[in-house]
Length: 398
Image (cartoon, rainbow, N blue to C red; front, top):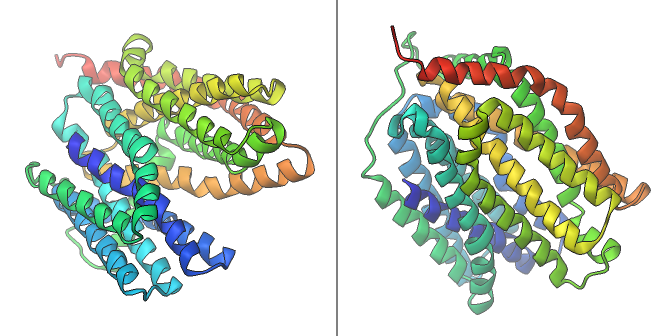
């Protein structure tokens, strides 16, 4: 499954780079270019409903189907580019369909991990999955997509389709397990909405997951407040040439990979609850240091440190969700939680842009750091609660 996830991530990374290039090649209208870029992310608005569907079918079917759907859409994009007929509205539709398939795949990929790893191995297994995603979407996919676009415009979409097809073939070897069937046995829209509501209600009522949802939304706001204006910050505040922006992104990606490699050992030593609190503290510190000391080598180090903290957060919270969610709700809990994170990001991007324009380029960093500091009291009760959950899971039965 790790190899299949890596291939899918490479395809996603190449798609994220090539789609805006295709849109800009097709039209000079900035609105439509941004709409194409946003269409695949907009699919996450349907995440709770898609998570319910994932919980009602074999996980392998969701993952293979998601890969094959992305293979089909990318192949169609390739054909459109070859023929020269690429209406921008069609690109928006195909980007959205590809995004929906991505939500199916990612929700099922998180739900299937507890079926393949023991409770004690969850952090290590999730760290491996996240490492594969970082390599694919951060290091390999985007530069490869941009380079292939330069060589021949249809090529990145052709390769993307091939990576998703290869991933689907690898996943056919997974056990064809499904979540336990719903007790009511109902079908149709009413049952779908009822199941979706049940998943959201579980998230908002659980004493560990509820504060984590609040904090992950704040994390999304802070992160996007910084990254939305990072390219301007690098050029105007740090006075670096265009390569400086790429340098900062590489530093962040290196930090993410280092965080994925070290997260299992940190959790083993501190426990998930205290590791979550440490991850937020590290990210807050990184943002605040940059807000006070805008020196480019230090900014690169702080971006790497922040990214390592974010990955530690992800490894811990994914594992906690997998432990706490009922087996029949793993897809819904994963997708509902991620909706909170993705849904908050546009707010952060808008806030970062407004602050940078009206207050200064250091302001988004200060906002992100102060928001995370304000979140620490929420995690005061999460740490012992999560640690207690782990002890209960690992304690032998009488």
